[in-house]
Length: 233
Length: 277
Image (cartoon, rainbow over all chains, first blue to last red; front, side, top):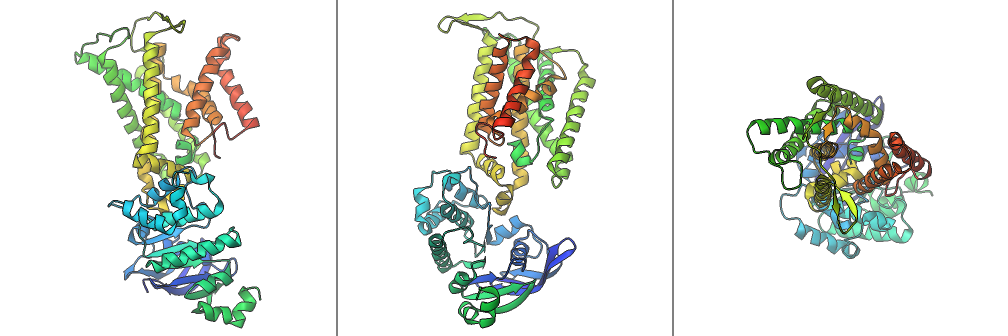
């Protein structure tokens, strides 16, 4: 487990959202976190990223305790994040977005940029375009490409398929598999529960700030209880 | 850009301009006192001390802005735009009155000479040599800013932070450094503006920046908030329309022109000509 959350309690002000969540991601895995709205999926992600400080529990990454570190320190250690919305720099070009992704690299970022363009060849074609002129699907790719520029060990994705057409969802998920196969652990929060479970190695079902189910993606799909409650039957 | 990156309308911008102008005055006096020859360059009304004072003042004003940010705005970063705006107004009063306290309310002069406008044969207009110089300097500043924003790493980081500060932070960009650079450049440009106005008008007053605030905001709103190129275009339009209007209406109404344009823009197209928000 390269990334672990141990018994995390966190919330906003007086309201506790997560009541003791434990989970983990291995580098070779794609992990899905699914569950209804308000379950705490985004809160969990924010806690891992350092955007929120947990009141209880630890986050362990590569053996180090990273609980409560600020986001830029966590990014430097190798966890990169793609937010659900506002995840690109619209007035910059595609290439400039990637450059910003690589901002803190001390070495030459060009080889990595070439690799990332290899995963997203469409972006190479569009590299001089301002991102605000691109379609939703292309923007999502830019968002993910930006996050990959630092060669992260774990990639956090917040609802990567949100507001995309089914065809684009398929494409994005294919890219996620490709990214995982290149050696990046993927942790994704998803509304599109069915597709997410089909894709992932393991999944966690969250509801009301508690972990309700934990199993392989396929097992969760076949689980009747999960199906009835969270997959819409 | 200060609005986008710092998240508030900087009402002290005009007085930073005044500060720049007065810092140049001090530097000028110092340099002249040091005995640097003050012979004017060719047809221009000033010599080496003024040029040196220009650069010194830009540097000092940038430093002042960074210090002000450290002691004031940085502590208020987590509050809202309105609190920051009021803080800026307070700072505006501070700066203006410090200047007045030190130099008094009377106008001060860089040069005590009057320049005659020469006629340019081809264009058939009359223009003073100083004004040609000003145009060239402004053009250089515009080009310099463009180059900085487009080609340098920090310039791109500033544009990125201007788009989406949170994403910039999450990408690992040191947003405090970006903020520092934003203040430095904004202040240096304001100072340049103030000094050039001083060269053009021949005198500077503690009020000069504050009085220009309305046209400044009108220009930015016209050009579109958050777009530095829009602001440049807006500035030209407001400036030119103000001057052209004096052909038709009394000079006393010149500020009103800027005001009217701003109101029209806010009603018809609040995003401005090139605005993105």
